[in-house]
Length: 134
Image (cartoon, rainbow, N blue to C red; front, side, top):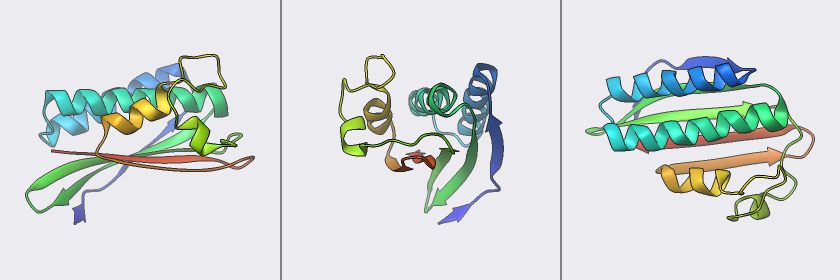
């Protein structure tokens, strides 16, 4: 599997979250992901970057194009140094929220992408890696 150069972006505000979605959409379209797949990916990125602002104040997003045989994928890593998630198993269940929302964000994000990894340490932050393949 080979990778194209990565693009990094700091997430500090709702404007940054919106810009992150546009950046990922542009990269996905240029990679030929297709409308339905790039829509799922950008929805997932919107959720993750919004979570950064809501829970951690600021973070970092890294995006790159992956190549595996004839397929292209978009890998997005969103990480922060916020409070972390105390119970990941609970956070990955539908309708569980510590922020007064519907609690569909992380489990919904997992369903929208082909690969989903999350690591979180209370008091140290959270790192989520997602990939959507063509």
